Length: 412
Ligand SMILES: Nc1ncnc2c1ncn2[C@@H]1O[C@H](COP(=O)(O)OP(=O)(O)OP(=O)(O)O)[C@@H](O)[C@H]1O
Ligand SMILES: [Mg+2]
Image (tube, rainbow, N blue to C red):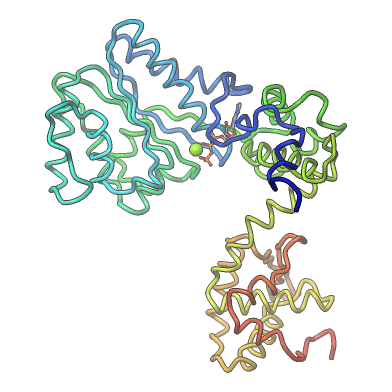
C-alpha cells in the first residue's frame, strides 16, 4: 500500500465545517420554538436573583423535545447574571439514570460544594443521614440559592422510591442561611402518580409541558445547525424536509432529526459525493432503525425470541395478521424442534403483550362475530433488519429452530 493509510481520508474534503454542531452535547446559542418554556423557567427562577425561593418545578415532554437543553441554557444565563449581580446562585445537574440512589444524589451535590479542609464524602459507606447533614451544612456555608436539577427523575423514583424527593423538598425547613429549589425533568407524563401526594404537591408547584415538535419546527432547529455545521450548499432539495418529517413522525424528536441529518451527510461523504440527497436520508433512517432494534432483539429472553421467530417465519411465508392461536402453533413446533418445553398459551399471551410494548410487534383485537374476539399479530420490525438472523446470532437455538420445515396454516 502506498503512503500512509490515513492520508486518503485526511485529504478528503469534508462536507462538515464543524461536526460538533451535531453532537448531543452541543449547546446551541438559540433555541427556536422554545420561547414559552424558556420564559416560564425564567419567570420562576428570577426569584433566585431577588433573594426569594423559586417554586419547585416539573418539566415534562417526549424524548428529544428540548427539556435538558432548555434547562441548561436558562441555568447558564442565571449563573452569569447571579455573578454579575453578586448574588450567590449554585446549580446542580444530576442525571438520575447515572446517579440513582438517595446517597449518591446527596453525595454528588455535597461534593460539588466541598471547600478546602472539608472531609471528602466517600461514594458509599456513610449513613445516609450523615451525608444529608453534611449537605445542609455545606449549603448553609455557601449561602445563596441552590437549584437542583434532577434530569430523568422517573428513573430514580422507579429504583429508589420517593424518599429522596421528600428529603429534598423539605430541605428549606432545615436550611438557615441558604435556600433551595428542585427542578425535576421527566418524559413520563404520569410520573407524579408514582409519588406520595405530599411529595408530588411540593415538587410540582409549577409544571411545564414541552410539546412534541412538528416538522416545520424541526426544520428550523436543523437550519441553525446546518449554518454552523455544514459547508454551504451541501444539502440537496428535500433533504431537510425529509429529515424533519421523519423525526416528526418519530414523536417529534429533535435528537432523531439531528442524528438523521448527521448520518445522511456521512453517507454522502463515504460515497465521495459532494451533496446530500434524499436517498442518503433513507439510508440513514435504515441505519438508525437497525441500530435501535438490533440490541433489543439480541437481548430478548429465549421464549420471546421463539415467539418473534414464529411470527416472522409466518410473515416470510406470506402470512400476515396471524391469530394468536396460529402463532402458538408455530411457536410450539419451534419448541419441539429444539426440545424445549413450550410455555402455556396464557403465558404466551402475556409475552405477546410485552413484545407489543417493546414495539417489536403490533397486536390488535378483532371481533369474530357473535361477540367473540381474537387477537391478530404482525411484526413491527423495520425492513432493514433480518430479525431471524439477528436473533440466531445471539441464540444458537433460534438458528436450530430455523432449520427444517414447518406446518404453516397457509401452506397446508
Ligand atoms: N429548540 C431547540 N433548538 C435547538 N436544539 C434543540 C432544540 N430542542 C432540542 N434540541 C436539540 O435536540 C436534542 C435533544 O434535546 P434534549 O436533549 O434537550 O431533549 P430532552 O427533551 O431532554 O430528551 P430526553 O427526554 O430524551 O432527555 C439536543 O441535541 C438538543 O440540542
Ligand atoms: Mg434530557
